Length: 129
Image 1: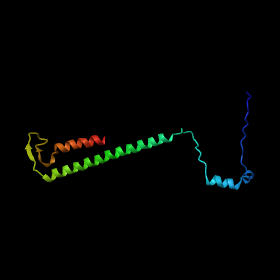
Image 2 (image 1 turned 90 degrees about the vertical axis):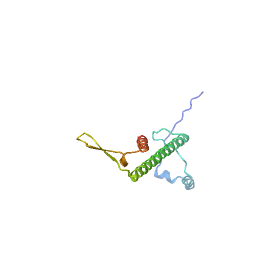
Image 3 (image 1 turned 180 degrees about the vertical axis):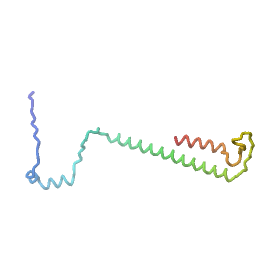
Image 4 (image 1 turned 180 degrees about the horizontal axis):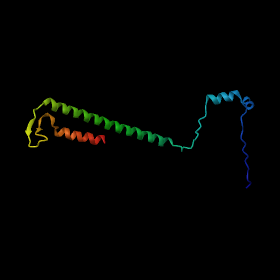
């Protein structure tokens, strides 16, 4: 087989060579541009990989949105429970102690959290983490 040598020459445009371009050809090219992919060193991502990545991001945002909505609902329920406890306004018991630092201890009444409030507070703290 014979070796074929291909000579490549760089074509440089000058002001004179711009005048030699056919105007109708230039008009067609400008009206119907040719899409060209040019890399600047980053690897090419296939379209399906890009779509999969976008779908995953959207799914993560939806999950995060659901968690935040649940957290807001729990906080609202906590405020409702606290309000109901305070409006019930049961008087508390004052119990004397022998400690000079705190001679009287307040027991019961509207200041103590209910079991439901404590569980809800733990759920809120766990969700916020």
